[in-house]
Every structure is written in structure tokens, then in C-alpha cells.
Image 1 (cartoon, helix red, strand yellow):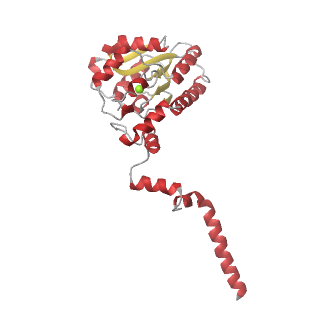
Image 2 (cartoon, rainbow, N blue to C red):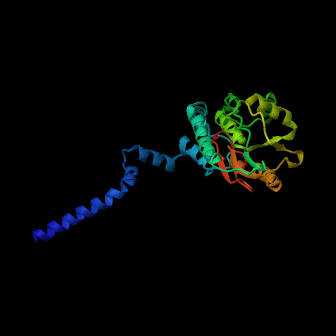
Length: 264
Ligand SMILES: [Mg+2]
């Protein structure tokens, strides 16, 4: 009888030990004193945290949003002005360069790399850091933004300028596509030259007939025209999902961070 009881309790102990071990990470969530529990409760009970919001935005799990949540204004400001934004951008371009330099290009000059302009080739951080813009937490002011564009003084995003300078000697032709109106071409080209982008195959802007179309439709149309003209889109880089989705997106796409605004 004693031997039976011993084996009974020994089996229970063995089962409970072997079952607990693979689920240690889950147990953390149920620890009433743990930080993981607090975070899990926060997710379910209230709004999501700002780091989780940013991740959801960057992965396109949250889309179609208008403004940075007011509670996340300081978080986004710290992200954009601190080193993490630059590090994240360099991570994207480093991965892209590894891809780009290991390909054999054609000899017809038709291999292209497509870039978006704002928050990709150029950084508008000096505009978005103004108090009445508040890193995208305040209502968008088109007049104010257009005045800024005419100043043509946006600096380059350092990671992308470096990547651009590495792409050219590899033989890639560069195509910039931006949803800015064609009527701003003079300012846009001036800004690009000032920022260090000295050459390009094409710089495509929105024609009057294309006004009113979404970015994803407009950029898909432009890329399709490029492909129909015989170009091969080897890579495509932008800060918006609408830069890298749609048709003829390219052989590989690269998403840069931008938690300040959303363009459909
Ligand atoms: Mg952009």
C-alpha cells in the first residue's frame, strides 16, 4: 500500500514538473507581481503602449491612422530625435546593400532602384519637430507644409544617402517617385541636389491628371510604366507601405521607419 502511494505521488510530481517546464514564458504572464502581467493587463484593459503602437504601425497592423496618439507624442519625438531612428534606418539600408551588391546586373542599364523621397531620401525632421506639427500629433497643415517644400532645405536621411552613394558605382540607375505635385519640381530637384543626390535616371512627380489618386495607385502606375519601358526594378525603398505595395513593387522591397504619418 505504501509503495503504491509512493509511486502515485511520484508520478504526479513528475507530470507537474515535465508540464511546467515548456510553458515557463507563459507562466510569466500569469505572475501577478510581474512586469509582463502589468503589460498584458495594459494591453487588454486600456490602450496599447506607445512602443507597441509604433510596432503595429511599422508592420501595417494599424493602418489608415490620422494622427500620432497624443499620449505618444513625446515617445515619437524621442524616437525620431534619438539614435534609434537613425540606427533603424541604417539597419534597413545595410540589409539592402548586402542584397544589392551580390547581384549581377544586366549590361543594358535597365536595372533600377526605386526610392521614395520624403522620410526616405530626405528627412523632414526639422519640419515635424515644430511645436505646431508635434511629430504628427497635430492636425496636418497643407499650406504650411507646402511653404516648407518651397524652402527646399530638407537634409538627407543619412543612411539612405550613403546607400545611394554605394548603389551608383554598382551600376544601378536611380528612380525617385514622390506624390508631390509636378508644379513643385523646381523646389524638389533643388532640395535633392542640395542634399547630395546629384544624379538620377528619373524623378517622377504627380501630374495634374493624377491628383486625387491614392499614393499606392499613383506609385503602382509609375512603376508599371517603368517596367513597360523595359526597366527592371531590382529594389524599392520607402517609409510608407503605399511605397512598396501595389503592382510591380520590385524584386525586393525595403521599409524604412516612420511613426509620424500615414499615407494610403
Ligand atoms: Mg515618404
